[in-house]
Length: 224
Image (tube, rainbow, N blue to C red):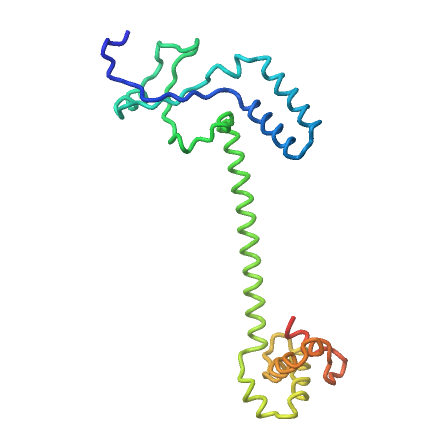
């Protein structure tokens, strides 16, 4: 028996129920209505009506979130074990919950094991995406480094002034050199010539061979 002056006073109680199937059924019914699938709506309503056949199961609380007026009362409840008191034929079991605002009420029917597998699946997907991103970034970096090694930064104005009208001839020779010597740096003639031609007519620059012996478009590889 409690003393007449019980020091532990409750400020609020929020009950939760074993109504997850009902919530899921109402969601499915709402989705059918939104999609104007009225045959599906009637099928979901039939399932919901079946759930109401066991009305007590839906309406008897399975747990309660109790807010005490004082922290001491909450601490006391947290240490209570094997209470002789009962509510609705069930024994009291006290567990310290998270903050009420962190609780998604309709998800309380999921077990710890289900949460574990859900989290594992989510972490696996995140790991795969991160690994894919790392591979893609590495590939881009490697490609950029390879491109920079073949076509280093050069002074195109100085090259144009030095080679003048012969720049096209030397650009073709430069193309043949880097094609035959993979990874070797360009002299700069090819890229400077291609940049200039691309500004004049970008479509022609990507298809014209400019006299290359095998008829290969010398600028296409630079812009690809």
